[in-house]
Every structure is written in structure tokens, then in C-alpha cells.
Length: 280
Image (cartoon, rainbow, N blue to C red; front, side, top):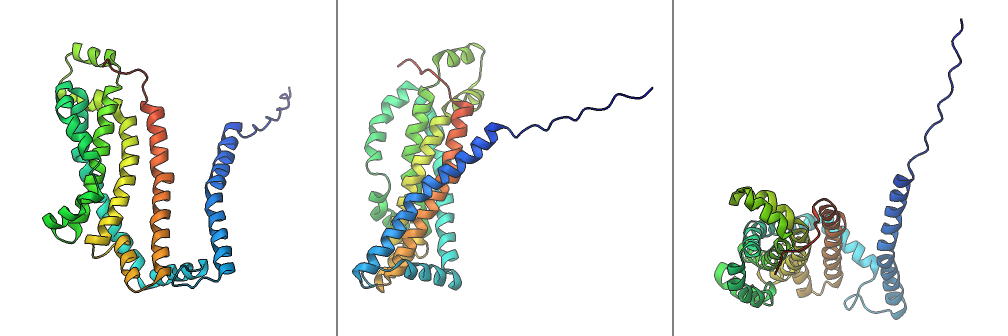
């Protein structure tokens, strides 16, 4: 008795969702890079047509040459490493101090009522306005720059953490308290996860403030870093190096925001986002 012939199993076509996602990413990248490419093209044409001297505004090729020189001399890695190190330390300090404080404000109406006026007052002064007094306290160097980064980020993180806790549904908090949840467990399992979407938004905003504060502080108080390189180039009228440093600062922030912060915010909202808000 012969076995029945085996039927060929048709191959499954690739999932439409995966293709759509890949195409969407490519389309999004093109839409994102398109304006930047158009700006560079307009820049090249305007400088070429107007014949403006390089000391006033360099050509695209001059800036590319300055970038190559900074790379070959090692200055680019040295300044970039100094800026990223200060940014990382300042961000870590802001997270360690700002998140617990903001969550405590959101969880306690008494603390919030007491500190809210001071918090709102300090938001307008955060960052660059503190550079003069930071140099008096810490001198010129890493500590002053790190303080400015911390100061720029602290209030944004604190405020968004407070708002995130207030958006946690009241029923969830009451249920946790009725089950005898302790303060430490309440913090790690209820308050922090519930406030996480708002915290990540605050981190994204705070890093923007911290990045600007970093560059400004390095111009005044730094001895290395991207802001310091930009300011030193101004002393010697190296406009190509100034523009190159500005390009590095802008591109680095775009990469951080596009590749790290925006996906983190989106995934956090998808995973931990809650609906409803606490009773005011």
C-alpha cells in the first residue's frame, strides 16, 4: 500500500505589519532628514552665490574640513568625551534627587502645597542663570558644569514626577493601602511605575534643558567640551570650527532624542500608561 503523496505546504507571505513597520520607519527617516538636507543645500548655494568671506560664514566644505581636522587631531573625541561625561554625571544626580522628591510631592498634598511656590519660582531660574554663582561656589571646571546640568534637569524631573503621581487613579492607591502596602513597596510597585510615563517625558524635556545648560556652562566655566571648543574658536576667528562645533552639538542631541528618548517615551507610555487621574 503506497503512502498518499504529500502536499506542498504553501509558504506564508511575510507579515504585512512587519513590512508596513519597516516602510514606515524608512519614510519617517526620510521626512526627518529631508529638511536638514534641504537646509544644507540652501546653505551651500547661498554662500556660493553671495561669495561671503569664510571669516563671516564658511562654506559647507570648509565645515566638513574642520570636522575632519578635529577628528584627526583627537580634539573631537576629547571634547565630546568631556561633554558626555559631565552630562551623564549631572543626569544621574538629577534622577537620584529629583525623582524621589517629585514622587513625594505628588503623594503628599501637604508637601506639595508647601514646596510648589518654591518649585515654580525656581523653574524660571534653573540652568544658565546659575552659572555665575556656580563659578563662585565650585570654581571653573567640571564641578561647576555638572552643577548646571543637574540644576537644569532637576526641576523638570521633579515637576513631571509630581504630575505623574497625581495622574495615578485614586482607586488603585486606595486598593494598595487597604491591602496594607508599606511605603517602600508602594514607591516601587505603585507610585514609580504609575508615574513612569510622565517621568520619561520629564527626562526628555530635562535633558534638553541640561544639554543647553551644559554648552553654556562649558563656554564660561569649562576647560574642555563642545561648548569650550566653540568659544575657543571664536577667539581666533575660526568660523568653520564654530559652525562645526554647533553641528556636532545639534546632531548629537538629535541622535539622543530620536534614537533613545523618543522610543523610550513611546514604549513607556504603551507599557505603563494609565487612564484616569487622582481626585484633586
